[in-house]
Image (cartoon, rainbow, N blue to C red):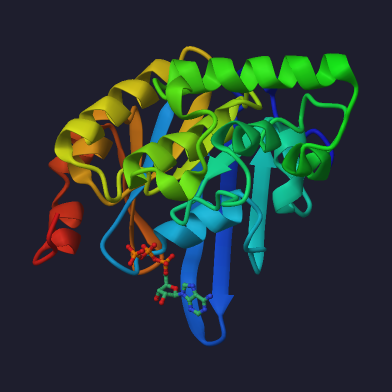
Length: 262
Ligand SMILES: Nc1ncnc2c1ncn2[C@@H]1O[C@H](COP(=O)(O)OP(=O)(O)OP(=O)(O)O)[C@@H](O)[C@H]1O
């Protein structure tokens, strides 16, 4: 954590400031700035290769920017490492889900809670003995989170035995069990039917009573439905920003998406 930077009155939950990322000679992001306001869903969209995943990776610490700052609640993060996220009140889901196949759904969700648990990740993963009270509390919270996502009945299953949309919910439960203030979602709608996408939309909207969300997503319907603000990227640059209505009618956005299948 760096020094306090901002007037707390207008403090955003997350800001990327003038971020540039280069992969060899390729400039994946060029001077990208965006901010996620408290209790808002901020969408990041753009055509293939625009830099969406790179934005996500910068926000959650997988990619260190060549230039620019990542600012969490007014404090500059000098280097975000993925395992620091929970301590920063952040959680994320990944396209690849990243569930552990050798432990049950419940145990997978428990591994997401290390912000609150006294014992760490490994003991949760291996279900080694921990303090009885911690263990009980963690199990209860993990079960409650599964229940809130409508999948308590699969708590004792192994992830690989479950359909993909259910596994996606498990991954979301693992992110939510830590009770983050800021949730980072990378393509959460991929592989979902349109009904499942509607349910996901309702769920994301319902989260904003207690957290803000950065949503990187291809599916325009979902983005337009749930986002308060959208940043549009093209070729690594911000080409538009605004409410869904503003973005939808922006000529630069229409131009960028010309010929894209959305
Ligand atoms: N690790 C990497 N090494 C080299 N180039 C990369 C790497 N990651 C991304 N890129 C390049 O950076 C650019 C932005 O990629 P990114 O994956 O962020 O875009 P995207 O908008 O998420 O694309 P998509 O919609 O296809 O997933 C692309 O040109 C991509 O080929």
